[in-house]
Length: 361
Ligand code: F6P
Image (tube, rainbow, N blue to C red):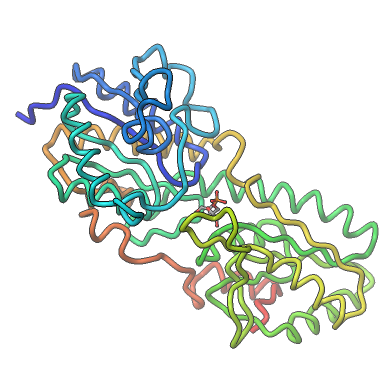
């Protein structure tokens, strides 16, 4: 009915634990329907630049190749996070080249696994006639149209483990430890890590902070004899009231804006205001590495299998969304249109406040 014989799968943007589970499930689901499936290396680079790869940029995917990968971190296909190739010089030409290459390789459809950048590239290819189903990927948990994505639980679990460790050293030295975590313009990772890790303050992009209020909170809490140290979790996108986010230097960033450095600034200012010894730690890419938790592994399998079912059902130009108990197919155009940000009056923020965790507001 859908005339599919051979499909491709690609993973683009930053990696996230659970990507290999998506690939595993997509390959099994496709092979079970008698379809061939190949993996494109490094996002779409394998098709754009085949001569750079000994295997021509495409990896034949059989059950044997993916049998033992669902529990592994990273992506066996590689990925690329250099921004949209179509927004660079010669962009529209590159889109045409890609469409031709899909035809040359007799690829009937693409499963594109990625975040907002990757899915907007997928949408552009879809608008030029390629059959596409997207799978959302982000450790940041910031896509409005899907209740959840894989990678987030692994990131929060590992960050919580790190904070558990920091409690010991912070307590021994009676220090203030500032921990910066990823999340871009959403504070989900910081919020859930801060609650689980029993932080004293959580700074997130959705609630701009007053440094003086955090300092007062730290002073009050450390005045008690029972806890003379503090743990502050800072989202990389956090910013002060009337201030801006902290960006890394432009060098080596391609076209993608890179956040980072706010933790060090907060630590310095807290030292000035409280007189306490402070240290800052950036967890950064440690949150993306490692194996997926069992939740992220099963989410990856759910997304991969659903993407193949979507193609088999004739869906096109959609992203798979997990909104329990339903799996939805959301048009790619809508899928990445809106960021899911932490509601300042939501239950998680309320819980944190009940536990005497400050947001600096
Ligand atoms: O979107 C996922 C993410 O890990 C963000 O939390 C972070 O800001 C960004 O990617 C880092 O990307 P890169 O791998 O390019 O440093």
